[in-house]
Length: 324
Image 1 (tube, rainbow, N blue to C red):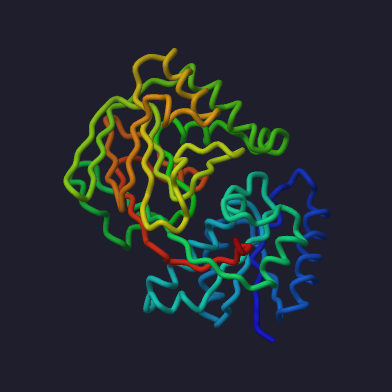
Image 2 (image 1 turned 135 degrees about the vertical axis):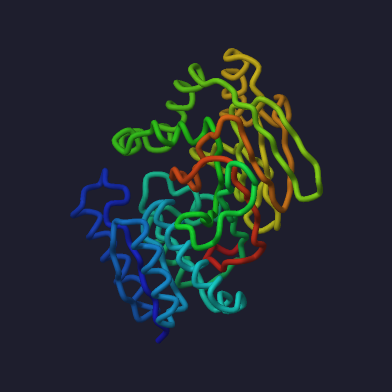
């Protein structure tokens, strides 16, 4: 019987309570034991979760399941991609990431069509259908030379599966408390979006593309998406697909606060590209600069500030997903 490890964040989706979450994780473990020899590893520290995923790959596990929310999935994916970068990249083909969506948002699972109910999610893993997806890579740059920070600088680079949000979006992430997320789930982001857009000012932003194109404007939001859905089925980078080999970049220009409110409503109703004034590109990479520096979030977690280089690694990771 093949070996599988569940790497769980026992605090994900804490609205259900610690005891209930433990019971759910244990039940999922027993379900997966119908098809695999299963080990359960748990930690609440994202850095430790990444290390556990890297260790699991090093120990020869080929089925690695992230049990938690999008932050847990991101941490596990970062561990697997770090292991890949230290090996021959083709070695990652033998690994498959599974997802048990136990968080408050579960946007990655939503984009893949993985059911929210844990029994159905286990069934997807045991069915064994694999899908190859792209992985985004964000690299922090120095403020003066736009050169890459050396790889040994801690936190200089980080992988993401869903999106890199720059500017206003990262501010929304900072202002959305855990308590609000537990009470309102994904609608918490909608609430904070509408509250903060009234206060937010634009920032001078410059985008530099690999083909030499440069775009500069005052903007209040830049979203670099690997997936279409952001939260609550809000699709900022609406044309993005997890397996198309490119990133989708959506920039919302800033004119005044009234227009920003109109643009935010267009985003929430899915009309910002066709009917709005959003600027939209598909590209293998982009460098984002701003004056002054603005925050960057990856997959819903605060990470760094501009300038940042963002690129795509096509087909870099196998995941378990329902068959189309």
